[in-house]
Image (tube, rainbow, N blue to C red; front, side):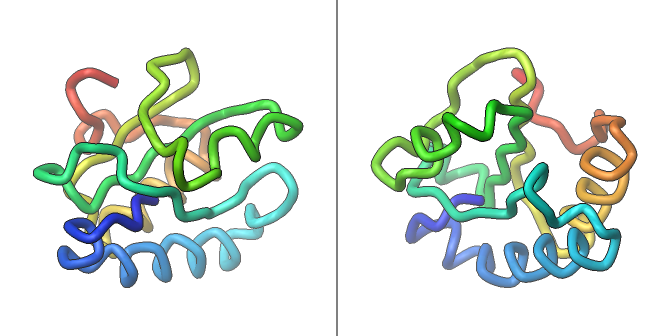
Length: 110
């Protein structure tokens, strides 16, 4: 989740808390699922932005370092713009826990 100034002004902190709580509630908050904050993705007009990646845990530090927050445009990466608490709970339940991307909420380029 972006933690840039514009996303935070658009209530990204609340969206982050909702994502964290939903992941814990569904039992997916473990070594396979990390809800984390990154720096600005440069997509401020679309915030709050959530980027979901299926990734190699050994390389997670490369992606989570705040200076490296960006879309990588790699397979397994999904950009969810304009997130709200309700929308992010749906993403966690359907995409993370259920394995089905939420097409209606995805950025058109994802």
